Image 1 (cartoon, rainbow, N blue to C red):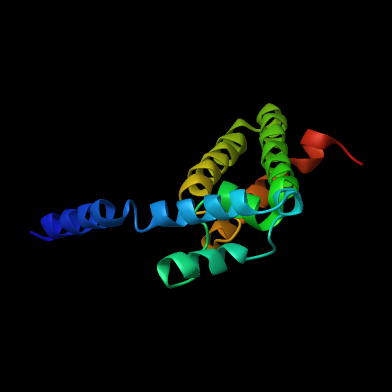
Image 2: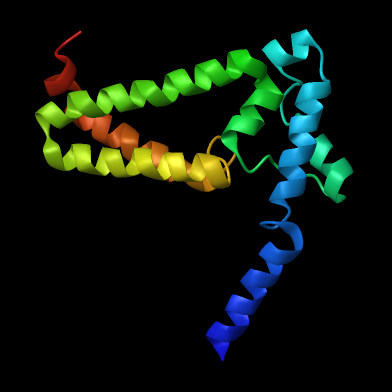
Length: 152
């Protein structure tokens, strides 16, 4: 009975709003990006500006629930480029750590996969609980730094 109630609640949330309002959030952010001028497309609308957009659309301010939309709206194409550069830098570091320590590389790979899943569904950069992903990655990279990258 408990499971049935939980399933009904989940199905109700998705049936009514398309994923807890994500369809409304995504549409309002995309519309605002497309309505902006060239300067806003390149440099964005400013930090936490998606909160203002979602407040108008939903009645309460929320983050974008997607790093791509959040960064594109707040920081523009330049910010999105930097965000992707940071992610792919960690991917490159994964391959370097893999040569040194396969077990640590596996944990680093899991962190990178969690990052991808979380960035597409609820956002990484604006989420407090993702600090553990970054701490774990930092510990692994720090542990293997000297062997992987040599002395600087």
